[in-house]
Length: 290
Image (cartoon, rainbow, N blue to C red; front, side, top):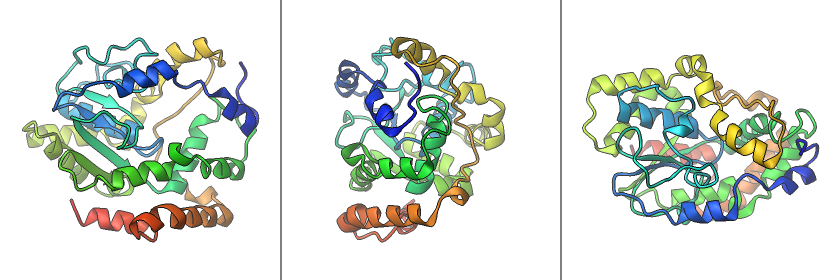
């Protein structure tokens, strides 16, 4: 199966997770201490996985790829992973991209919010060379597709978790605030996990979540585990690339028309539901409630 060369081919792929695998993920019964890292795609999921795993394991890097030690709930069954098995450290940690209304209840939930334009650009960059033939779909085309995702889209995901932000079992952070003060974010996560982590462990987790450290260990964060299991089964080329460690600098390549379309979509969804005029306003309100 070749990589998609246009949006119709990309939408026709629909091969990332099986119905059975997805259903099994949703049927999981969490332990009270389980931690679910469930941002929208390209909103800091891998970054947060590294923080949480670093805290619980005292900085262990004894894994080939981060998803091997923090299983992806929705894909675990398809990847031959038993979500009920013991993990390499406690508490148990799962990656997810599920909304609040979808995710199994009973654990603790960490969500990273990110500017939707930046998240879209990062996703496009991530898919190019893996699911999409690089350069075959323009950024403007992909942006329009991104706006049509409905219940599977960024805005439905963000709205679902924003509505749950006051819950004691939910922690919301912003990608941008994590970049500004990573140590503060690690402390928020450590306090939320409530495992008594001392300052030395928090400092270590912060150092190992910095861009320079993760870039130096990029192969451990590049989805190679998923590719080994997934790509041969669905027939995607095996020479794909997916660099997940980047500085997050994406705005310069985005046109005014894309930004305007995203602003209008924000107004019609999150703005209408919560009275937040923009992502910047959401971030500002979030920052007032550490």
